[in-house]
Length: 342
Image 1 (cartoon, helix red, strand yellow):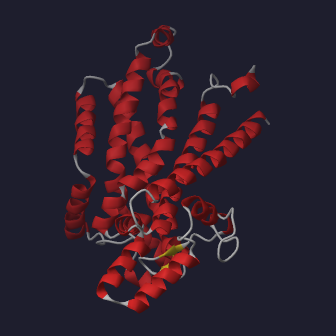
Image 2 (image 1 turned 45 degrees about the vertical axis):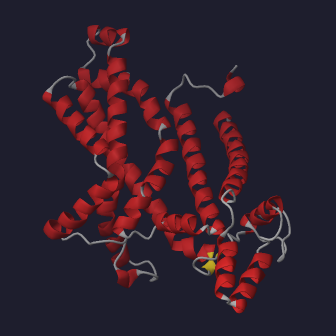
Image 3 (image 1 turned 90 degrees about the vertical axis):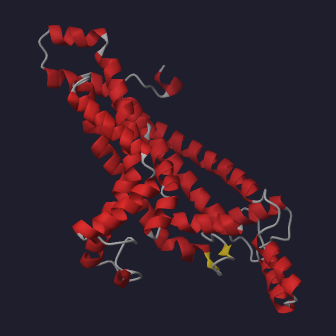
């Protein structure tokens, strides 16, 4: 019951934080002078295209871009009626992409779940690699196992993701017949979900998962190794050994649990880092994620599309932080629910 109250409290703070983030995102998006439509209007007037100017002016009025920035924000969120009444994020209307001339919801529809899928696979890869290698490197400290794991880790940190993507792009297809580019075969794009489409997606996920997750796995492995070494040097380890506790049981029962806290806390930072770090990789590999859309929107000042993608990344950050907080409470009995535990 206490955990449920704590989860409810964290959920409310998450919503409040998301609201503050939305204000900051809208302000930052509008900091550069002009926007997509004003830039387009200037170009059309310079070339004497009166009809194009009239259409752009209509769109500015239609989407309330001719109003003060604070009114634009409340209309975008859906807290204030605009030209079409209450129609904003709260009502499920994500705005219009002027660059692609389509609703933002249509552009990011498939890209959202593909982004979540790619980054979830990358997170699972990070934990599947970092956990055993970090523990093994700490348990076999200053041996060839530790040195090999350290070399692999530093190699993963030093290799740029886009370079690794290009290498696997070529050799993966040449020697292992892995598909090149995209997250599914072109024949399955827009088609309903079938077992053949699932197999195609899983096969296409191999290279992006490895590329996006490599640097994260290397950093987390080094962090877990350092935490484990710190715990292994504490007196309670010697006491457990003196009492005859086996090395494997002693390692997993005490030091690993204590060293695991920062490992779990990293979930909040890992999800957004994967999304932001995969933008260039998505462009190189031709992935149908929101990364290329964000890059295009920022370059062209397509504010509704850019703002929604940034809000999506912020939401991932907050969800990851909430998950890590709840897991830490369950994992470590020393962590309390603030004043509720007194």
